[in-house]
Image (cartoon, rainbow, N blue to C red; front, side, top):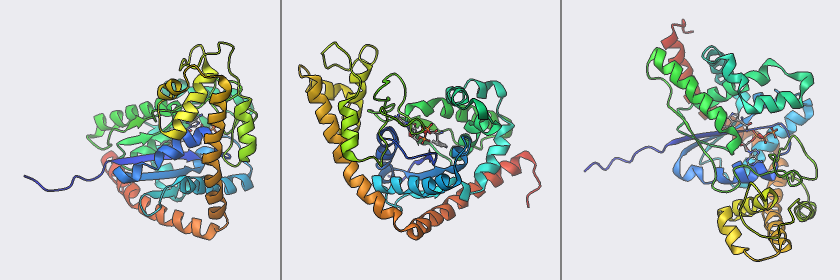
Length: 335
Ligand code: ATP
Ligand code: LTN
């Protein structure tokens, strides 16, 4: 019998440094990410090139890029057990992104929901980078021979596109890219706005329906207590007819590692106030230690920078090999 240990599967995910992350990002991304290093060779990226597809103040982009790195760590990632880096520190991302543009059809990009949403919200700046955003994301993923991409469910469409691009390339040049698949958390894959529970909670649309990770826990608890519900008076997981209650169940499930259905069962027959109280308590319980750790990490940017530079060095080694292989197959003269 063979005793060889199979290598860990590879995972990759990214978060844009386009603002202060929300509890949606925490529940749908940062928190589930922390399980990955135990079972995967895990890459986590601060995708600053993606963030600039919407105009950013230079000082905000700078702070938020360190900030997203600090939230990854504060959520519980150990930099010795995974590769944490800033996208723009590994130039192969933009290089492969350029190449993959030529394997992507305009029609495919026109169908992307995130593009349509953002183009509608930023009518004054519907730039080519926003349009090509998913191609750069495909490059992020394909550079590392990624098998699994943990994300919130809004990103599944982009991952499907990455698979199509990879398949097209492989069909022409032979087996080159590994086929990635998206993985969404069992609870909180799409946390909704607390005031408009039919739309995604978004860090780029702050307001009374959004809880950002740097908000005071007391203020966050107030927002939960004021969350929109309905007049049915029944606690059940019904996203269609009770989107506000379903969202609270998702949030509590995400924070306590349970499915929303299991949480609904626990609260069956109780008042909405009881559910809101429990959600508020869970949010405060999560935010307090997270914020303390974030503040500590951000007070030593030199140390953060060292962690990110080491991550970029590790990532670059793999990324450079992939780009070299791609260029060789296509007939580029290598440098
Ligand atoms: P923006 O709001 O600026 O468009 P975003 O928060 O959607 O940005 P990212 O910061 O890149 O975009 O998202 C990082 C991760 O968080 C992705 O995996 C995304 O699917 C997940 N995510 C974002 N919003 C939510 C949400 N409301 N619920 C669950 N997961 C989310
Ligand atoms: N598009 C994602 C962020 C992102 C990403 C990635 C996620 C960029 N590159 C690679 C997973 C893998 C977003 O908007 N949430």
